[in-house]
Length: 171
Ligand SMILES: CC(C)(COP(=O)(O)OP(=O)(O)OC[C@H]1O[C@@H](n2cnc3c(N)ncnc32)[C@H](O)[C@@H]1OP(=O)(O)O)[C@@H](O)C(=O)NCCC(=O)NCCS
Image 1: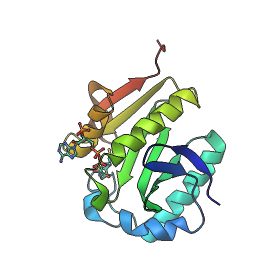
Image 2 (image 1 turned 90 degrees about the vertical axis):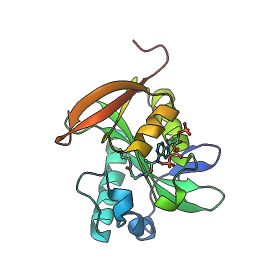
Image 3 (image 1 turned 30 degrees about the vertical axis):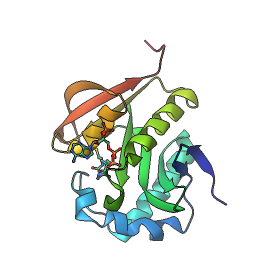
Image 4 (image 1 turned 180 degrees about the vertical axis):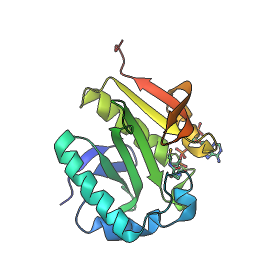
């Protein structure tokens, strides 16, 4: 039985099961999905390794990278993640969805729920998001959920657009 991390109107984010890697490997093999992910497409072996590592990290730090399930379909359409932005103490929200599911507000719904989970259940005070300036869909998510633009910042060896959200009442 899957273990639900959080639920929103149409989606749930849950812990990974052993059989999930095989169910999602095609998503991470698609060039259009991975166009703006540093390093590009993931082989099925890499997807399995990433999921295994993220399951460990979830246990170690209490947050991580979870499958996004459309409740009405019972299907994983990608993932949403809370994690440390590379080599910084900042916590970022990130999301990757399979291309047939783009443009339906799913990423915004997942990211909003993940940020609320971070603020309310994990007591994180500030969450950032980064994207390549050309990744208009990802920046659209940041805007649509009301994150605040911070201009550009250098991460993953590139100049990225950065946004932030702060917990209400945090300094
Ligand atoms: C980025 C991604 C998760 C967006 O998913 P999505 O479910 O299509 O996002 P949403 O439907 O919630 O759309 C978010 C906003 O972006 C806007 N948007 C969507 N496509 C757009 C486009 N091509 N140009 C401009 N804005 C766009 C939407 O209008 C929406 O804003 P609104 O709520 O004000 O209408 C999805 O495209 C994806 O997985 N891309 C590949 C992986 C990736 O690049 N991840 C981000 C790494 S930083």
